[in-house]
Length: 329
Image 1 (cartoon, rainbow, N blue to C red):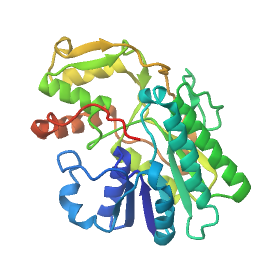
Image 2: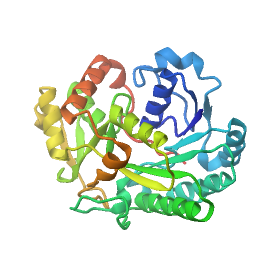
Image 3: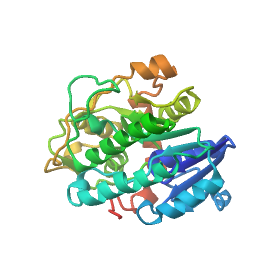
Image 4: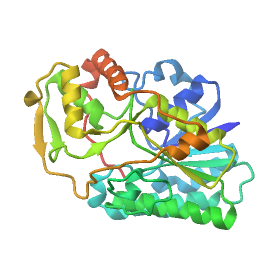
């Protein structure tokens, strides 16, 4: 079996790519940027010399036709799709870029695969932001109610996949996940950035008052969720994946400051709330439990301890890297 990871340089993309390398799977990755160093991605130390024929640099915006040609040569049985414009706040500044990349160009890629004889599953990694803020725990068939251009673009491409399935029996699955975290995550994401701020005593800017509540899903549970979709004997289905814990962002700040023995008043600064920020993303995961036999295994405390060790062991190098998101077309 061949596996292709679109967006293999995203946090979860590199996580699946490296895990499948470790399992000796026939896996390939498409990504617009090069691999990171072993301080950020520890697995690179072992596999960097093996990437020449497995990791390919493509920018979805500019290289979609080359990507389609390469896919037709590779003939992957499973495509796991993390690729696209992935940040929320900047989508307000250039919504047309999010719509062009995440809808128009992505739909071109999907459409090119309609008649492929090799593709068994196209697994798209989606977001609960398509549902908008809701105090209830939402099932997979809840009506979409996006609050940002980012979420609009994800809702639209999800609708596109549903249409392809109805018309052409396109073999899609969608997994919508709670917030990812784990070793190797981008340093501008909240959990690694908080640890870096605590360890280096540099300011951490919190959007708003930290009242929004989130669930976080750790690396091991991300991998097992995607494995469960690959093994699932069916197509045209959507699944929610989340932890069993929910925490306010301010409580997360307190937890990480306590874990690192840092007085939060020394690092914490407040900034404006992000436009369109949703207060809750609550996913009902009964379907994943009953159909896929999937449940999260790693508690938030256990996962944070692992991140604390990773940041502590590499603080000198990681603290000198950029902690801010850098927009790219």
